[in-house]
Structures are given as C-alpha cells and as structure tokens.
Image (cartoon, rainbow, N blue to C red; front, side, top):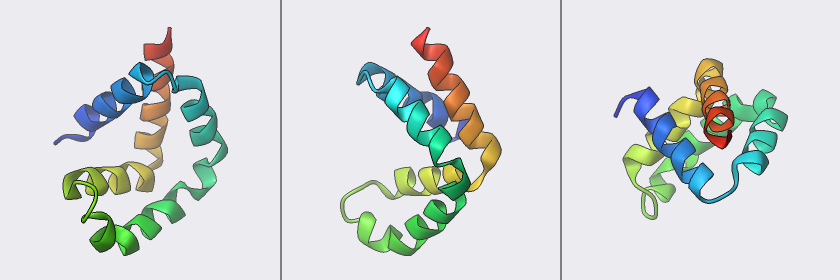
Length: 82
C-alpha cells in the first residue's frame, strides 16, 4: 500500500468517526514525539500483530517516523473536515 493511499484511508476513517479536530490537535501537539512513538511501535510490533494487521502497524510506523507524512495526514484531515 502506498503512503498516500494509507494516509487517505486513515484520514477518511478519522473523519467519518467525527474525530477530525481532536486528531489534528493530538497530532500537532505530539509532533516532536512522533519519531519516538514510531520506534516504540517497532518494539511492540510482534505483540501488536496479534491484534492488529501487520500491514497497518508497519504503515503507521512509517507515517510517524517521517515528518512529511505526518504533516500530510494533518493537511488531509483539515481538507476533509471542510
């Protein structure tokens, strides 16, 4: 799955859940910790894969590890909320 497709799907799920503004606020507030969280996800990935799709976990890790992708998710959420 490409990064853009994953971002679009994740943004769509957040928007349809009605959690756009809380998600944007949370992402903006925790941007400095995103890389650390991505590394923690890598450590926890074997356990998480029992409950969550390995593809989702890997895509989420990649999203949090790269600032550009995180910013793209925030921008996509803001665009979809209008």
